[in-house]
Amino acid sequence: MAVSDARTVRNGAGAWSGAPAPGAVPGKRRRVRAVRVWAGLFVAVVCAGLFVVAARGTDDRRAVLVVAQRVEAGQVVQRADLRETELRGGPVSGVVPVSSVDEVVGRVAVVPLVPGSLLSRDQVGEAAGFPQAGQALVAVSVKDGGAPPGLAAGQHVAVLAGPGQGAAMQKSVGASTSAEGVVVAVRAASDATGGGSVVTLLVDADSGSRVAVLLDPRLVVRSPVGVGAG
Image (tube, rainbow, N blue to C red; front, side):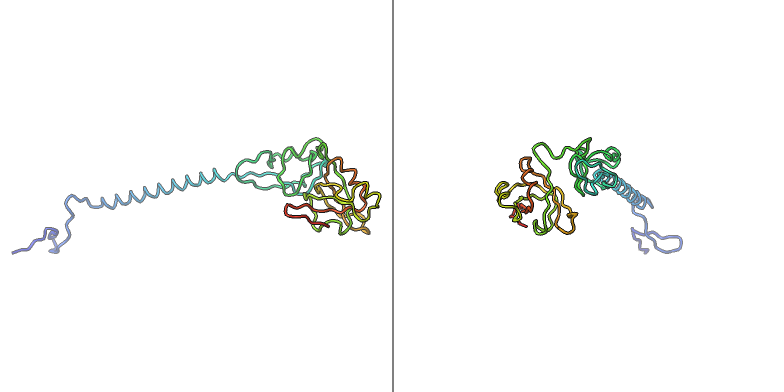
């Protein structure tokens, strides 16, 4: 008696072959898989595009102007005094974009411009507004050893009458602290024989005349963590 298998049928060549499952359509599964693959690729491409757009939206870069070399108050700002840099993040009030360089070149520095600082629109104008009312700029000649090494603009100092000051003058200006101020500029003295440096200080107006008559001033740097003397 012939034995039959419900899962197989006999073909014309006499060999047994697998019969398709009831209700199955040849190639349908392959088409479904292909559709799913393409749908997945489409979603991936869309997500990647959205990520790029979002990244560009958050990466806000602007070309702005930075002070390249020191410009004293009252000096005319030149193109060589400025350089370009890239500013990232949110907006910063008052900075000057590179596209507006012609609006600041040729104008006067209202305050001293410090190298490396972002240029602000309120730092330039028609005339110097520095020093302000109640302040005075005074230059003192400091001999070698009269100030700490590395004295630089921005440091707070106390100005003392040095040992070279006559006794009468020391009494009139005060043998203790004559004034306190901020270093605005430091440059080597032009007189090579004397050495030392010329230090420009910003002091209150009442102290300016006392500091100006000091013959051998000593500068003491004020520090938040201590005091260094020269």
